Length: 314
Image (cartoon, rainbow, N blue to C red; front, side):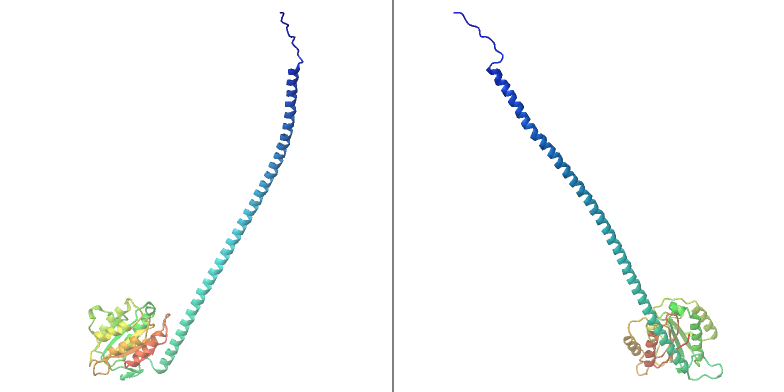
């Protein structure tokens, strides 16, 4: 049996199938690729729009930051101005306080001057140069004491008129007919000459001269309150039967009260059956820091203790 050999045909059915499949694939690729191109184009447009929005927002943020910075600067300026106004208010308040204090001091000076005027109408403690004999009372001050104590304020304001005070000490000693002994204490009770502490300084011309020389150079601590000095004078030097006068020299009183210390001094000055141990006199001086407090204190102290208060002119 003879085998028949098949002939090979190029354009057969299988070939057509392959060609059809390839053409379909091409069509499919075309259909797929076109929407992707449109999608890519629209995505680029949207990205550009978003980028524009981001840039616009960043610009807006920068603008807002500048506005915030400007507002902060304005707030700081307002705070600075407010601080300046507060400082100005404080300065004005301080100036007002100083003016009130100056006015208060001026009122005190006027009261002190009125005391001087009243005292000058009555007398002066300076000795008279026209009389050859001494009275038992000069200028309203009893001068019959055998012993004299000076309680002197040694503060800075009194040191400014120290020569005047030295002169008045000599005047007081001169108006007394006979002085057996004297003593000088500061307002805290400390003796001028420590060697004579608790003792009497003999009253002789030579001794006076030496004591006043030491007194001119005296520069001791002071609290401008004569209470301690008066109490020391009564405790250490006053005795029943001893004729004693205490002269308190000052220009101010810094104590916090009047009645308690006045009552305490008056009680200390009671000498048993005797009416009092000492006569207490006050001499007020005018300085740059003079107030009426010393006059108020010493007017009442002298009134209750048999003494006299004199306010001397400047």
